[in-house]
Length: 265
Image 1: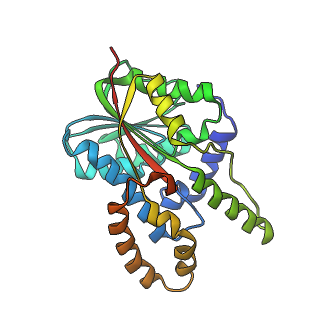
Image 2: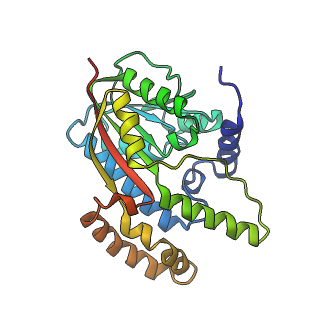
C-alpha cells in the first residue's frame, strides 16, 4: 500500500486536471510546441537504447500517463513495457490507454515491485528530482540496479542548475502577478552527484547529452511563443539541429541525459 504524501497528492491533482496532456507532466507554463521540443529530445535518448535492442523488457519509472511509453509501444512493438508511478490516477489513465500492450503499477521508486534482473532497460526521466533525501536517492538507484539485468542499461534525465534559475524566475513572475504557486520542492543535480549515485550502485555512465542552445534561448523562445507561434516552430527546427551539434555542452543545459550500464556481479 502506498501512503499518501505531498508528492503523490501533488501528482494526483495534476493528473486530475490535465489527464493525458503533456503540460501535466512537463512545464505547464510553456506552449505545447516548446514542451514537444523537450519531449522529442527525451525520446531521442530512449531511442539510443532501443534501436539496438528492439525486443527489450523496459521499465518506465515515473511513467505518468504514458508520455514515453506510448512512443515505445508504437515504434517498438516487440518490446515489453511496464510503468510505475506514485499517482494512482496516472496509473489508472495509463492502464486504460495501453493495457494489455503495457501495464503500469502504483508504487514508489524506492521499493520497485519487480523481481531481480527483470529488465533490459530502465527509464527514469525527470523523476529522481522529486526525491529530496540523498539516502533515498541512493535507494532508488539501488532498486534500479537490482531489477536491471547485468549489462542492462538505464536512462536517467534530470534538471540542472540552469533549470533551477528558470524555475525561480517563473515563481517570481507568478508571485508578482499574484498567481498561486503550487509547485513542490525538487532537487537540482550536477554531473558529479549523478555520477556518484550511479557508481555507488554499480552503474557506469557511458554517455551524457544536453540541449544547451534551447536552454540558453529559452527566455527568447518563451517571448516569441507569445507573439508568433509559426515563427517559433521554424526557429525550434533550427535550434534542434544546432543542439545536436553541441549536445556535449551539458553544463549549459536545463536537462542532462545519462546513459549507464549495469555492471553488477
